[in-house]
Amino acid sequence: MALPSVSEPRASERWFGRFAAFLLAYLLFVILFGAWVRITGSGAGCGDHWPTCGGEIVPRAPSVQTLIEYTHRITSGTLGLLALALPLWAFRVFPKRHPVRRYALATFVLVMLEAGIGAGLVLKQLVASNASGARAVAVALHLTNTLLLTGAAALTVAFARAGLGEPARAGQGGAGSSAVAASQGARRAGGRLLVALLVGLVLVAASGAVTALGDTLFPVNAAGAQPRDHFLVQLRVLHPLLACFMVCASVLAAVHFARVPRCRAWALGLGLMACMQLVFGALNIALSAPGWLQLVHLLGAQLAWICAVLLADAWRRDGSPSTQLPST
Image 1: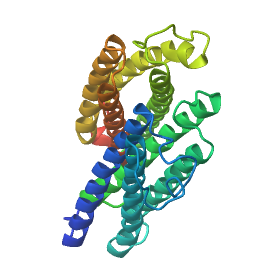
Image 2: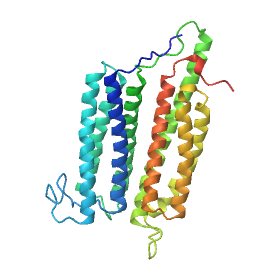
Image 3: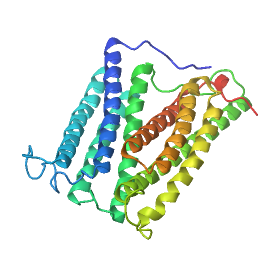
Image 4: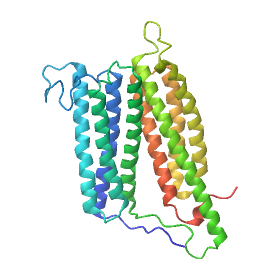
């Protein structure tokens, strides 16, 4: 039976792992700050200019909204520089075909795509009080790309710290053909379950982004009648329904995969974050979605997604038949 080859990371790999972990933490901060820009209605703080702010490199006598948007651009630009350094460093430290190279490069590409989407929102004026369908679609795509980005960054950290190359393959060695077939069948079933889980989490997160946009543009506790015929108000009911379904699916998946030693930590993390998200979502509804709670809810969604991505990767890398799920 072939087992994964594990080696102690070298000093250069450990330093890279620390840098990748810092980039992931900083990425989460930038994501939350971007949400704060939306919550405060500061997306048009620099007008429809990009990359300049109001046509100036440094705005003079800026308003509060301009300061918020300009600060977001500075933090996002810093993220771009860090993301550029990530693959350059990875290609110097890790050998050819090492997963860290692949995920570090993906992180950089997705950061650039994230910047492009943000620039498009500004240039097309899909910010501030814009309540169009185009903005709703753009916001959903923006969050989808953000999830892919945090997933790539998390996988970069995971492989940099693991000291592992490609996963070992199950079924090698002296196991019988029937046992191998059963093991491979269980792995394929588990893989399909995890793919469905990841797709579901993306869909519920995208619906959450649209709901958050509606809560910002049409606050529940605002004076005056709600425009009940507006699609952003009518879609409010969709996200809680999808979220409840995905919480149940995440908890069941966590219980299922927690029986595999390599997957246990991330499975338990996913289950815990899913339950916490249910609480945060209920509080958002009960308190009419205050800004600070939207940020907490968004952070919880990102952490749950990271746990799910790393759970899927742990399952993919677990190549030993002896660690398969017990038959039921």
